[in-house]
Amino acid sequence: MSHEHVSNIGRIWKVFGILSAVTIVEVYLGILKPDFLFMNDFLSMNLLNWIFYALTVFKAYYIVWAFMHMEGEKSTLKSAVVFPVIFLILYILFILLTEGDYIYGVFKNSTIKWNF
Amino acid sequence: MEATVTTANSEEKTWGGGNEPMGASYGKLMMWFFIVSDALTFSGFLAAYGFSRFKFIETWPLADEVFTHFPFMHGVSAPMYYVALMTFILIFSSVTMVLAVDAGHQMKKNKVVLYMFLTIIGGLIFVGSQAWEWKNFIKGEYGAIETKGGSLLQFVDKEGHRVALADFATTMSDEREQLTRSKGKWFMSEPALPSYSVAEVQAGFEAHPELLIRTEVLTKAKQKTILSREESLARLSQAHYVVEGANLQRNEYGSKLFADFFFFITGFHGFHVFSGVILNIIVFFNVLVGTYEKRKSYEMVEKVGLYWHFVDLVWVFVFTVFYLV
Image (cartoon, rainbow over all chains, first blue to last red; front, side, top):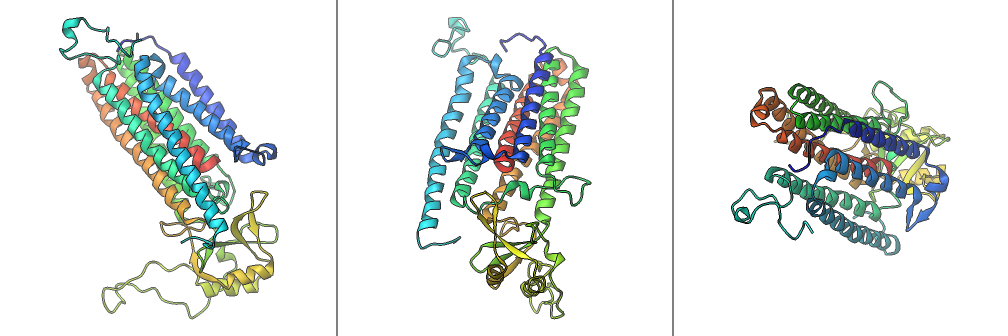
């Protein structure tokens, strides 16, 4: 291992605080479901869900960077791990969600009315 | 750029082995690549969940009506509190894990032992919580009716509160006896019968004029549709099957795929947590007997730590996708 072994207990607890705070905000919003977020859509998903996903990625960043100590790794390792995951996930999400929405349209507008 | 040129070693060593172009040992690098492939597996599952949900976007169950239980609080609707608690437990066990890795870097054996132990305890509590969550999900609370067309009908009172089958279904004397192996003519048996037959539910519904039926369809206000009394009676005449709780065929919460994905994804994640606990226990005993002290490196703790954090990372996404969105 190339990085030096300084103790970073302070940072660990700080990250724990951040992750806890974000989780509390998520649960609070999930129970409250404020109408101005829940009923308004952006790119056919409501704003509340966008917030949830943004907070989730935010938490994921802290887990990978601080807990898995990605911040101390070489940039080649960072790129080799992060880029394939991000691009493949965006790709599969795009394909599957578009297709799912299309099938929803088929169910809704064609003669097939329900589960088969 | 670091990526293109290997400068770490002298020329003689380049082809001699022991070269670490990414600055990480072989074991750690392979753990990272395993995590990448596992992350893609999980995203495949979650994307499939999204696919099915988009397919049935108008009839998908509302998560905060499904997961409402909290230990020792019977009959209290507590959406999400329990799963939030589980999330905290898992994040906290991640913290103790990273503290163990940190203590390992400083070669403090006793601290590593303590933090590994706490991590294992956290993992076990999480798996136990998941089992409890499954138990409630499988057992169900209210019961529902499946129609011939495959849609699901739930029962509510005038205020829109859910009503359980047990609260209104009548008991008829001509109830069918369950066919078991001991009573069969040949090697015959059948799956467990529901507590009430379709006829009992229909009769009970007719006897209680205050009851209404709630369908799976979401309204503009993102609530489930409640039918009028006449429509309710008409829909109930199409009843075909009494659904109680959840299994892989049908569930009382709504779309059949909902329970399938819940079982599969949280089950697969739970299996990962379980494997992580086993790995942690193995490494814990290695720390205890001083294997890494002799090796003068606690890198093994770091490697299982990576896996453990990954399990936490996946849970963060499962939590969002199943419980929040």
